[in-house]
Image (cartoon, rainbow, N blue to C red):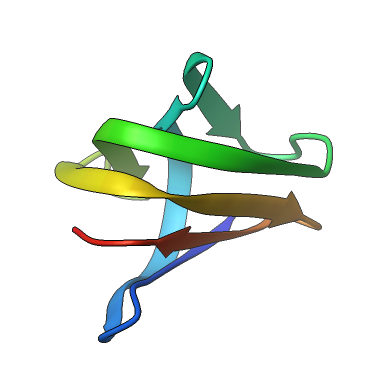
Length: 80
């Protein structure tokens, strides 16, 4: 699936991933390939990305919104 992470200042990440774990406002959750469409508010915490080469990247975010639709994930983060 494709991931795009955007802050008010810049595009932080764009590429193909296999999973993403996010800090939701009611607890952490994970999005995998072919996940049902979702829009969710994000809290402060760690965001963990696993790319196609099985490499892991972590970012600390402070709020925002995530949208998943048709295997495209867009994270609009307040700050990273």
